[in-house]
Image (cartoon, rainbow, N blue to C red; front, side, top):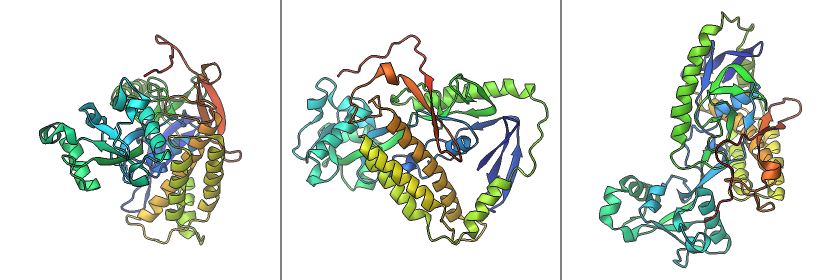
Amino acid sequence: MSLIIHDGQCCGLIAYELATGKLHTLQSKAVLLATGGYGKVFKTTSNAFASTGDGLAIAYRAGAPLEDMEFVQFHPTGIYKLGILISEAARGEGGILRNNEGERFMERYAPVIKDLAPRDMVSRCILEEIRAGRGIEGKDYVHLDLTHLGKEVLDTKLAEITGFARTYAGVEPVKEAIPVQPTCHYMMGGIATDVDGRVITDSEGTVFKGLYAAGECACVSVHGANRLGCNSLLDILVFGRRAGKEMGRFIPTVGSIELPSSPEKVVADQISALMQSKGKESTGPIRAEMQEVMMDKVSVFRHKEGLEEALEKVRELKERYRQISVQDKGNCFNRELLDAIELGYMLDLAEVITLGALSREESRGAHSREDFPNRDDEKWLVHTMFRHSTDEGPQLFFKPVTITRFEPKERKY
């Protein structure tokens, strides 16, 4: 729930125990955050319900900058309305995307690789078809057709995928196409770190002593603006290991650390304010409105007017959040309280994502600006960084991109 920072060093954390409602102060010489992504900021996502970005928001509030938050990957084939993933394996085996005319529309957009084009491109193409009125039955989805692959292939090579389609979409993939639409899937941005998992605080790579991050919550930037499939494993396995080894080197160099007095007070006051509030707001409507505007204005297609509307809405929701009250006053498994705390984290992240998308006036990877359709390496070959400020809101600064062996090139399909 909160990191303990003393003299510029992370020296532990405050944890909330859901079963009892108690706060625990955990002192340590180093803390590693590996808390996953924040897909629940968006209405439709393949992510789990727990993907509310807590680790990022906690680090952000403690002074760690967030990097490249505008780069959010949308997977093109989530089950309609639910977002449950129908993976690339389906198209890898020969699955075909079709519009309401039965046309294999990806032939028009990517004549060579067709349905196997990158995720961001296929997501945009699906929405282009929907915008043109070629969604199935006029709705906001298209069909993923596997019927021509045959029962044996579906049952042996794609058993899990076809099981999802039967259970959650109510269709039989051997005979029927699967209704799909883009779904929020993975975050390229996160807590700024170096290649050893150490959190950095500025564009020069100054280390946040004692604080580490790995996995989807971190941004080493190995994915750049658009992650390739399966490379999330690179994030957690390679950089999780590197972070662990670096922590092992760091810990013996640190002497005894004195904690600040009453380190749990800020968290205790936050919980008390939510529990004692007599405000008229509740988490459900605010969360739903946040997810709706983020999906509508800050997802696959973005432009200035929509992003400004989204930013205004998110900030309005942050003001309404101040009036949230928790009706469940119990200590044991108080899920309502936890939802309220998580919503505060998600609103912080929604604001930073939107500001990053608004500031980056180009299209690059998973970030697509309709008003700036081209990539601009001269101006925007930089990392966006946001630092938290209670008084002035998120503070934007930039970090240069390091070019090593491979020069950036235009994608052509």
